[in-house]
Length: 303
Ligand SMILES: NC(=O)c1ccc[n+]([C@@H]2O[C@H](COP(=O)([O-])OP(=O)(O)OC[C@H]3O[C@@H](n4cnc5c(N)ncnc54)[C@H](OP(=O)(O)O)[C@@H]3O)[C@@H](O)[C@H]2O)c1
Image 1 (cartoon, rainbow, N blue to C red):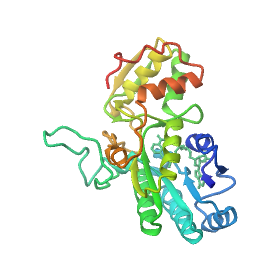
Image 2 (cartoon, helix red, strand yellow; image 1 turned 135 degrees about the horizontal axis):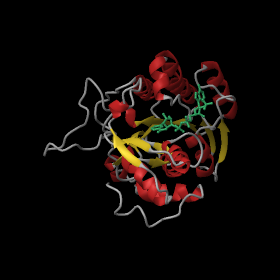
Image 3 (tube, protein in one colour; image 1 turned 90 degrees about the vertical axis):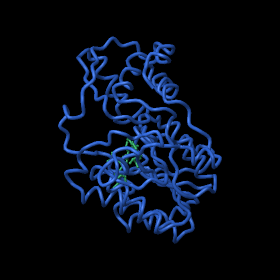
Image 4 (cartoon, rainbow, N blue to C red; image 1 turned 45 degrees about the horizontal axis):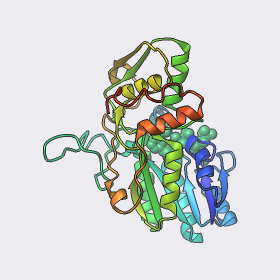
């Protein structure tokens, strides 16, 4: 099966190459395919004629998107639309990667509640309510894909990190080794997800024939603060770590406080659950040569 991966230079894009190793994969980084160009997308899909296109390209700079929402729309909304249109012409299927940031803001509630009044994870069928320009551009991308190509898989994920690229885990390791105090927000909760696990889940979805929208994150949830605790515990780094509220950061783009995605629709439909987030974190730290206390996280970190 021929597979085209866009955004192949990103942290997820790099791991998709390995996940689709038994297929003929062509990974195109941004300088080889700019998905915001309809002509470039049409030409690449027509020339390569893949059976599956995986769109891992996105403008993921959340504060940058807030300052330049037109660029965010061009990449995160029009880009997937051009891909969906090209796939419709050639008969390819499209896996489009989306985000927990399509939820969490006005006009909807900041978190959905269950019958007891407790927060419950967002399902694939909750109404989208993005809190910032990045989330709005990704929500628009989803809608444009849905309306254009029936043979689509929209895979929503959250809090990505891997052994390469810019991500929270690698930032924590850098700060931890630098020996300076670290302050991390504890009022945003989500499901940290390792890119190798997501890449494997995307491959599973891509060959499943099950079209539609799917939530795919590592199991369990925590705050960014608890994730930092787990990184430092597993890497055996003695760090002056303390929690802080999101308001202390004064960032241009607001972030959702509750980003936990429900994967029951996916698992009931036969897609395998992803591993727990702590196990995934330990594996990525091991890949980075940073796993010194593999026994440290269980029990030591709030869920
Ligand atoms: N990171 C997260 O925490 C997170 C959470 C939920 C969902 N997601 C979604 O997961 C997917 C993968 O994210 P990631 O973490 O792997 O992001 P990433 O590391 O920033 O990778 C995105 C890649 O897309 C490329 N790109 C940007 N604009 C492009 C364009 N116009 N045409 C083609 N490529 C372009 C980037 O290239 P340059 O670096 O050269 O700009 C980068 O290599 C995205 O759809 C993202 O929205 C991410």
